[in-house]
Image (cartoon, rainbow, N blue to C red; front, side):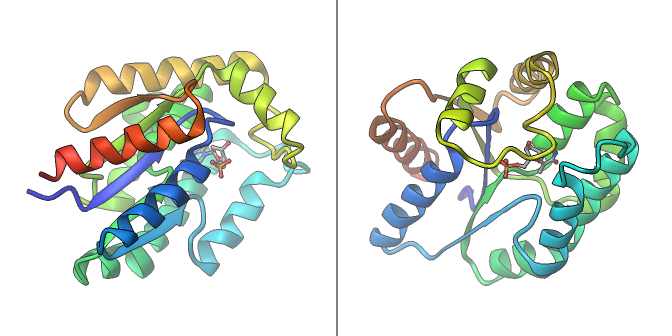
Length: 207
Ligand code: TMP
């Protein structure tokens, strides 16, 4: 079966958004109909939820509130944008999806992977990714990249290194738990090579 719904995951500063855009261009050039989007966000309601979650002033946001807001934004995103595109036969590339909630809220916030999976089950029903590409870089390397690139830091970027280390350890656990779905790409290589590695992977799994 074709891998139609593909999600990109990774620590802060992994370069996945840039990689996703380049991959989208190459797939389109190859005649594949692609729709790219991101989480939290992708549509008006979910982008507004994103602003609430990532606002640096919301330091008092409860961890469960945060987890529910991510799940709510995901629900609307699926209903309004992801499912319709998949039904039209498009390949959907999504920058972050459920694994971000499992890693960040489940492990980073210590709410537990199973609890986070439960609330997300309610939100996504059976809409799991066909393939998840994890761009692998160490948290400290990614955070250094973010600060060197002068990207505005959001509330989650500003969490401690220990938080980001827990998120990374969480991703490693998820890779072990879902070895068929989650595939690892070395994000330390030069950007062009990483893009080619991702293209190879997508072409290979869809042969
Ligand atoms: P981004 O920086 O990749 O756009 O993602 C926004 C932030 O939101 C990033 O720090 C990861 C975090 N996040 C979660 O904590 N849980 C989620 O479910 C998602 C989608 C993102």
